[in-house]
Image (cartoon, rainbow, N blue to C red):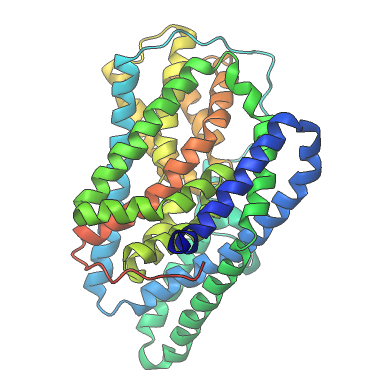
Length: 409
């Protein structure tokens, strides 16, 4: 019993915080506004700590890779894995909606979407990859630009040779310091996530029982199947039976964090810790997981298909027309990879969908509501999928798993 409490104390405390928060959200909804600041404070601490961690983790990993061929193989394996997993998730969801069709979903035409200032595609591409000021890099709103800068910094420090030794040591030291900082912040996770979960249950929960129950039920049922079946399959391919046991043993905490925060970014620290406990090499985990938090989204892939399917139900068109399916796969890849690096990228993906299919305005509210309500499970699939993707990359890139690391509870 002592060993169980020692090994699972963090998970038990987090579950306790979420359970208490859920009960408060259900039975005392008027109290959640007073609790929400606690959740916001925790998330803010987490976000400002994760941003420098991402920079140091990616730059240090690239700087510490000894052979350029090895680095290239890891990157190629990462891109291949991301695309493969996203397409599998999309095709699985298409098969689900085909075999388990749902009725047309009524839309609420009175709901109004907030219109952002018009912006050209050229401006979007520029802001997608870069920022105009150095200080803007260290913002979670510009994660892709930060990742690119970290890549370039790590590559430059490698090319600098002996002259860059001190800087490479700085990157390695910064990474270790930021890891310890994250561990300190996560000590208060049960309180912060419990407060945030109370707010979610009180505000979003009731909507789950409205007109959107059927498509939401379809998404949640297929998402849960994908979560357990496909992630188990990926872990088995990567590391056999022991890999399956290690993945699920260490995936509990990240999953609870994801469902509480609805943020892949906030789940990243627990994913990195889980990767270390599984034995994924740091050179792979510190590349795949930070990049994956922005550009690898299994849950978004599945929700994209569901939203397109619902939009077609609303207007009475055939979703399963071959051309429509091909376009759906293309939009899904964009939403899951490209739009993931853009602030409010989900809305951009939805507008792309409306534009490509030339759908009427009445489809927009329903699509946006579904996108909001599937967010908890989508975040779990998006974020924890990065850990199993790192396992898969380790396998196909020919790297060896290391001895699992342990952390103090």
